[in-house]
Each structure stands twice: as structure tokens, then as C-alpha cells.
Image (cartoon, rainbow, N blue to C red):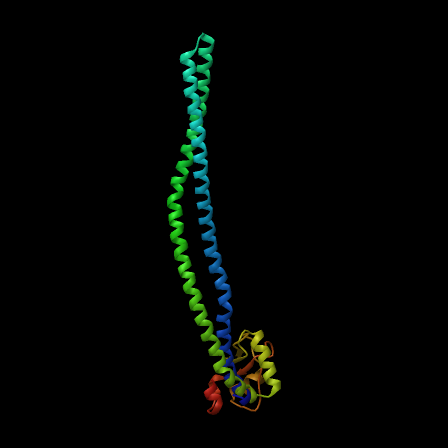
Amino acid sequence: MHPVVAKLFSLQKIDQKVALAQKKLDSIPKETQERQKKLSKLQEELTRLKDRSTEIEVQVASLETKVGAIETGIKKQEAYLNQASSPSEYEAARHQIRYLQRDREELQNEQLALMEEQEQLAPKITELEAAVAEEKATFDAFLKEADKLKVELEAKKQEVADERRAKAAEIPAEYLARYEEIFVSREGSAVVPAERSYCSGCFTKLTPNDWAMLANGTNKVLVTCRTCGRFLYDPESETGGEAGSAS
């Protein structure tokens, strides 16, 4: 393995650890948002059902008042019926009683429908209250663990920062710049083995000359993939030193 490639390979190991830590850090806000959205959705549904239950209570009370007023009216008409001095007055009172009884029945049916709806709401509200409490507990636990994870990951990144600077300082600026650009564009894969004369990064076949330089184990020529730009090495022809330890 070419000495520069060996150093880049060691650097890549460090950078991959940092990238993994950063990826986990970056995922925390998104997961937090998704969990918060789920909890908010449950809370909104619970609020909607509770509001509807309160609305039903108000409507039932209002209907009860109306039914009471109608029953008072029926009693008055019954009194008129008993005191009627003519057939026409008697029939008028009877007609008014039937009219009021019909209205009372309609209101009572409406009351019954509302009360049945509220009975159906009760278990749903209880179930949602339990779901909200469980989800909130889970979310609170996640936030606590997320805060702990953030501290651990930031510490891990800091631990390798000095080692990373030392490794990078040993690499010529030209190669370091190319490596860093490829590492980002190729998602953490800038130094890869050549397997059976193919770049394992993009699976492009190497030229016979490039493959020969790698397969012969020479460390005088730095070989890169002519398609993806990755730095290449042949794991089967490595010999001792930093190259061996790096791979």
C-alpha cells in the first residue's frame, strides 16, 4: 500500500467514526419531531373528544330545560281542558296538548341520542387518556436519553479530534483535500480496496496498468479509480509497516 494511501486509510477510520457520531446526532432532532408529532396528535384527539363530551352535556341540559317548559305547558293545557266551557275550547286544548307532546317526544329522542353518543365517548376518552400518558412517559424518557446521547457523542467526537489533526498533518495537502472532497461526496468511502481488478467503490474495472501496480505490491505509485476518484489499494499484496496496521 502506498504510504499516503495508508495514512488516508487510517484517517478514514477516524472520520467514519466521527461521521457515524454526527449522523446519530443529526437524527435526534428529526426523531424528536416525529415523537412530538405523534404525542400532539393523540393529545389533539383527546381534546376533541373531551370538548365534544362537554358540548353534549350542555346540549342535554338545554334540552332538559326545554322539555321542562313543555311539560309545564302541557299541565296548563290540561287545566284548560278540564275547565273548557265549550266543545271548541275543549278541542283547542286537546290539540295544543298533542302538539306539545309531539315536541316533547322529539326533544327527548334528541336527548337520548346525545346521551348514547356520550356513553360511546366515555371508553374512548379513557383509552386515549391512557395512550397519551404512556406516550408522554415514553417521550420524556426519550428526551432524557437523547440529551445523554448528545453529550456522549459530542465527547466521542472531541476525543478523536486531536488524533485526527495529527493524522491529517502527515498527509500532503493536495491528497488531503482530494480525500476530504471524496469522503463527503462518496458518503464516507474515499479509500477502498481493489477487488479482482475492480474498484470496490463504484465497480469500475481498472486498467491493466493500474491493476498491475496494485497487485505487484509496489508502494511507489498512488493509484486512484479513474471513474469515482477513490484511492485504491490491494489488500492481498500489503506488506507490513503502517499499511498493514492501517488495513
